[in-house]
Amino acid sequence: MIQLCPRQQQTFDQLKRVLHNHRVIEVIGATGSGKTTLLQYIHHHLGGELIEMYNFIDYTRQHHPLALEEAFEQMVMRALHQHDIVIIDDLQALLGACSGAYPRSGLIILPLRKLCAYATKAQKTLIVSSEVDCTRFAYVYPPTMSLAIQEFQAMDYGFFCHRFLDAVSASQLDYDKIYRFASNLNAYQLRRLCLELPDAAKADTEQFIDYLRSQQLTSNVDLGEVQAVDLSALKGIDDILQKLEANLIIPLEHDDLAHELDLKPKRGVLLAGPPGTGKTTIGRALAHRLKSKFFLIDGTFISGTGEFYAAIHEVIEAAKENAPAIVFIDDTDVIFEDGGDSGLYRYLLTLLDGLESETAGRVCVMMTAMNVSSLPPALVRSGRIELWLEMRLPNEFARTEILQSHLNQMSLALRDADIPQLVAATESFTGADLKRLIEEGKTLYAYDLVQGNALKSATEYFLEGAKIVVKNKQRYAEAEDDTQRSPSRGHRTRTSLLSDSLHQSFLRAIHQR
Image 1 (tube, rainbow, N blue to C red):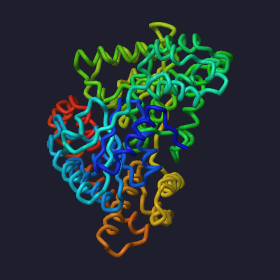
Image 2: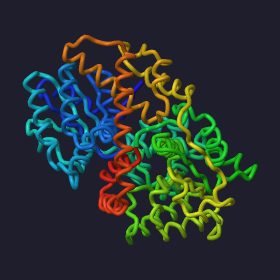
Image 3: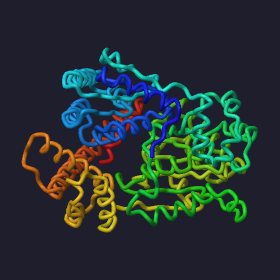
């Protein structure tokens, strides 16, 4: 059951009052203010279709990387034809992806205006959410009604504490005093504080504030910007998850047991495997599971620059301050494939050898890699990598589990697909490929439904989706072969685009597949 804090409820009440007089409504708020929660609540109470931008962008980059605008317009227009209310979460992600150095900068404005005009003319309602520091939607479509989730007050702090602490403990806290001490906490931070508060059953206001004071250094990952993934939801890799639980999570989450048995997380962990097998997904799941104990280094850190070394130093120092903790380095082989980076290399050797301090020896360095041969030999030698995990292509059993998990979330019209038939057609498919298969099948079904074409069985749509995935994999393989035949050209392209994290993600998707 979705519950709203007072500030979120206030915004929802405002929305209900203006709903009949405005066809385009924008909900704005800071990161962690609960925009997604509010939109889910709106969807639950008012119906319609809820569209999540991060999922859409991720999918479109993989399939139609230069057609974000067209794909977005088609998707939302289909939704408006089918529903009276269409809700779009995190629109700032789309605006960001279609700006800056993006090859077709600014072209998203026209489709947005077209969709708004259609919603107004057809008496439909379009509700979008975006960040406070993002371009206001009213600039795109002036008749837009803008509603804001205001900054949390003491009463909102009380709401979250009563939700995540036991009733007795929550009733003992002076929320006005807590608010005066830290007036900028968001929903995620309040939830984390409540769940991690030592001896919460006996905590008073001063102990709560002392704990706030101790949490000055936290993860560099904004979980509001990272798709939530639960480790238990990952299918077909039970052996990997068991090893992660035993070697990383238990020493990090169970302080008393770790102290009693002198348990420490493995210093060096290598997660190796082909693209699409779930390495980065495991990273996202660990970030949400471990929260302030998780620190990320990825392609958004621009290698070969002074800023790069300063950023690396800051992350590693923060990890040591929060030890035991994990430094998760995504696509380590890409960072080192051209013989670099010496600064990061020295840092990692220090951490893995535990030479600098006691806390350095309690920091786990977890690396992902597609091509282990690109890693410096000294980095992966015995004694530094204490846990080596191989991500494999899912076998028949794993593909069955993954497909079943996806189909369980489908509408009834698509849920009864013949899984054994799909499994037989997806030999050598990665988990990412299986997800794309499902998305392609849904797209084909939606097209026939909207066009009034004769509908096929769910199995047929997903088999067609599998064929599309196979063709795309062939194209990616051909593109990768071309890059390998022209290594200097490939390197220049990669280097130039690393300056923009969105382009870096796009190139990675093309290069890996």
